[in-house]
Image 1 (cartoon, rainbow, N blue to C red):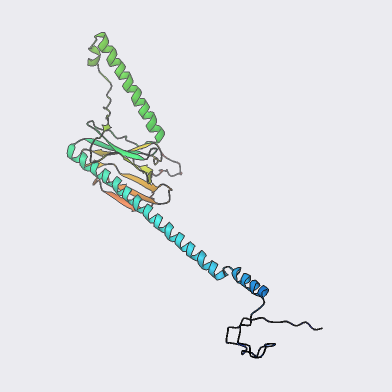
Image 2: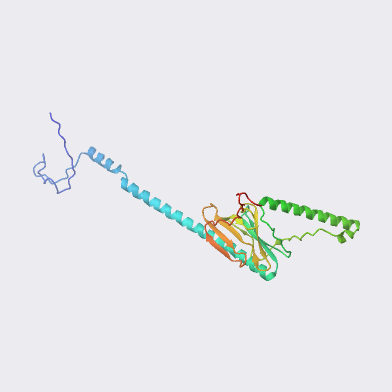
Length: 280
């Protein structure tokens, strides 16, 4: 016997097969819906509910999520760079203020840049500060400071010994000339308070009296009474170290130029002779 396939369809009332004319319909019967058996209807409903999302719909959702993530990241970077620019401008204002202050008061000032604790503050002195004649490395500076401290301690011991013994002839004896070292104290002014960086950091400081840029510890920028400072290159970055601003200080005018990006400091060149050997 040949298999017969029966296609069930649901026909709305009043459409499809005329009333009373369907197969096996009794005479005089009204028009009714011709529907699939209950089992077939449940199967069709289950297949419709389990269809899910199409590939196109999934791709559209992924594209929207990626676009929103990109916009959020761009906005965050913009806010971070704006904060970095504001911190650079504040540091520039502090240096300009110390330059003007030294010119008007006749005192020595210096800006202390603490790269380990990410803060900076000002100090002042009534003494004259003598700049080294040649650029110094970090090790040379440390040795010089230790030597100066030892000399000061020895001089103080001799003075205490002479005063305790009542012998004042020592102060009339010829002494080796040593320039008085400047003693700096904290500069207390409401116009320039100590600043701690929270959303940015000091990355690098360089001045011509250094052989290498300072990336840790403390660095100093001096401001002289005659209206001069020392040339300096300061790099400030965000906490991730991705965005940079460079502050370049002019030694004569005290003007601070802010440039976007990390500007390489003008390191001392190595001078060589005709044979290519480095000269001292």
